[in-house]
Length: 204
Image 1 (tube, helix red, strand yellow):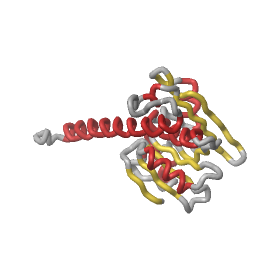
Image 2: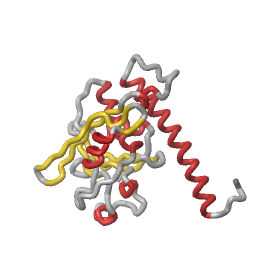
Image 3: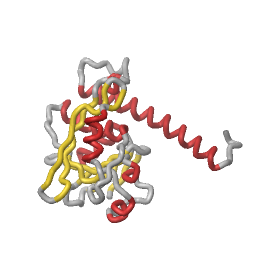
């Protein structure tokens, strides 16, 4: 491998590494959420139990002043994406400035579902309000996003939960170890950014 000095070779190696790292994160998330959401599930002996069960997510978004949209349900079951609900979630996570929607990262939806599952496991009803999902280039630039932002490929979401401290949300997201976690406590909505990239944390 050390003699693979070509650009293609280096990208290939990096891709394999990212895939393996993602598998490890998903196993960790499976352990954490299975333990939280179902006492009957023995995550220690079956770490994939959470991923084998139907995955549910509910999102809400203000698409323009006074106009809200909602979508939710089981987006993944029986080893495959449930297209009707998945497409509704992708629509909620669209670039509202241009109206363009893309197929969002299922890993991202899993992270959001994990956060939702944390609160449900503790008997807390929440409303996950989306501020930003997929962004086209101009929208990303206007938002001050990085040129390689995960938002550009449908791999990131900015959201807040009314009544829940953004600092607490950060702790839950970091515990799940799903990917990148950015906290924005000075924004008027005090929101959290999560993405399906490498594990990292920052304050914006």
